[in-house]
Amino acid sequence: MQFDSISEFFAMGGYGFYVWLAFGVSALAMLAIIVDSIIKRNAIFKSVARQTARQQRRQAAKEVTERL
Image 1 (cartoon, rainbow, N blue to C red):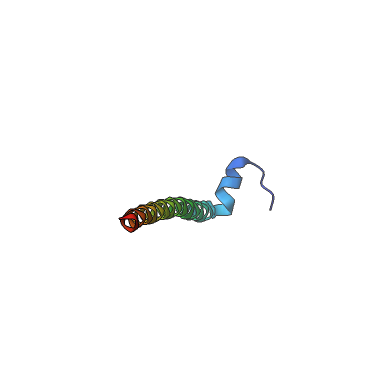
Image 2: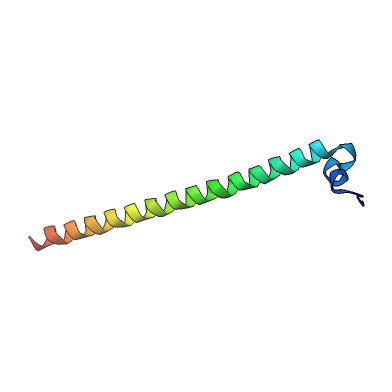
């Protein structure tokens, strides 16, 4: 499809509102998925770091009690 002007391009033959609304909703959904993934990844990394630190503390405490 060829458009004669930029306004015709945005109007999309009278369906511009629906086309651009669908485009915007899709872009917003993809952005939300990316942000949610980043937040969850950071939460997982923090959880793993807490578990690792806890295991190290437990191992250190266990070594101390074994020496006694």
